[in-house]
Length: 388
Ligand code: PLP
Image (cartoon, rainbow, N blue to C red; front, side, top):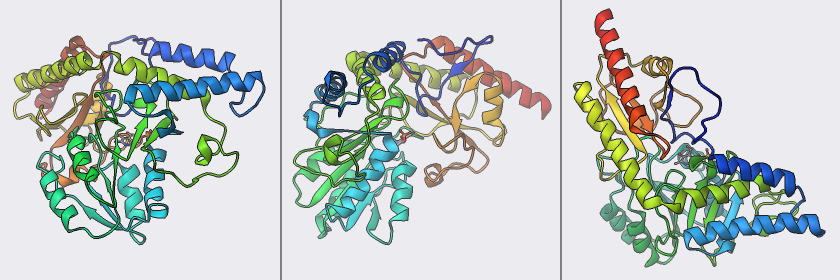
C-alpha cells in the first residue's frame, strides 16, 4: 500500500477508524474518470451518456456487493449527511414520533437528535457493560410502544469497537408494524460481510473514506418501497431526492473501493482479528495494568481501545505517541483531533486519571508495525519512570 509521501523515519498509521489510506487502484480509477468521463451525467449527448453509464454502473456494483437493488442506493457526500438525512426523513416523511437510539452513537446521530428534542421524543436503549445494545430490553420497550417509531443503532461503535447484532434487531423489527430501523454502518461497511438481503434494516449509512475510498462521498441504503422526500431541490438528480451534479469520480472510486474491500473479506477479518489479538498480547506482556475497553469476541476487528494506567500522562500521551511516530486517537474519535473525553467514553467507568487510546487497523497494517508501536510505548514507560 502506498501511504503517500515518503517518510524518513518509521511511522505507523493506526487511526484507520478516523480514515483509511486510499487504495492505489482507487486513485488510478478516480484519475482516469476525471480525465475520460468529464461529461455531466444529466446531459443527453454522448459525453453525458458515458458519464451516466459510469454513475449507474457504480450504483449496480455497490448494490450487487450488498445484495440489494441499485435503486436502493442513494449517493451522498458522507456518513454524516446520510445520518442527518435519514433522521429528518423519519420525522418529516415517516411521521415518526418516537426514536430509540443509544447514548454512544456518533455525533452525526447523537447531536442531531439532541438538536431535535423539541420535535421528537428520544429514548435511549439499555447497553451491556461493553457498549453493545441489550436486545432483550429493546424488545421489551418495543412491545410497550404505541407510537410510530424509528430505531437508529450503529453497527459498530467508532470509539470502542462494540459490535451490535443488527441482524437480530432487524429480525425483531421486521415483525413489527410502524417501526423503522436504521443502522449507521460507517465503521463496518467494507470491513464485515454485509448483505441487505439478510440484515433487515430499512435504512443504512456508509462512507467511502472508511474503506480505502475517497473522502466526501458516501451512500444511504433505502429499502424499497420507502420513498424519501427531497432534502435538496434543484436539478432532480438522485431520483429527485438529492439535487446537485453528482461527484462522479468519487462515486466511481467508492464503488471500486467497496469491490476491493469485499473481495476477500472473510480472510481479511481473520487477519485483522489476529493482528488485534497480537497487539493485545504484546501490550499485556510489556505494560503492566493495561486494560482494554471491549473483549475480542464482541467488538469490531479493526478497533482496539486501550486504557492506559495512570502512570502515563493523560494530557500528553497522544502527543507523545505522535512524537514517536504513532498515529492513533484518544477521547473523541474522528472529530477533528479533539483530545477530550467524549460522550461515548463518559458512559463507562474509566478511572479519571487513565487515558483511553484507540488504535485502529486496516488490512494494510502488519505485525512489524505492532512491534514498533509496542516498543515505543515501552520506551515511553521507561522515560516516564526515569523522570518521575
Ligand atoms: N458514523 C460513524 C460511526 C463514524 O465513525 C463516522 C466518522 O468517523 C461518521 C458517522 C461520519 O462519517 P463521515 O466522516 O463520512 O461524515
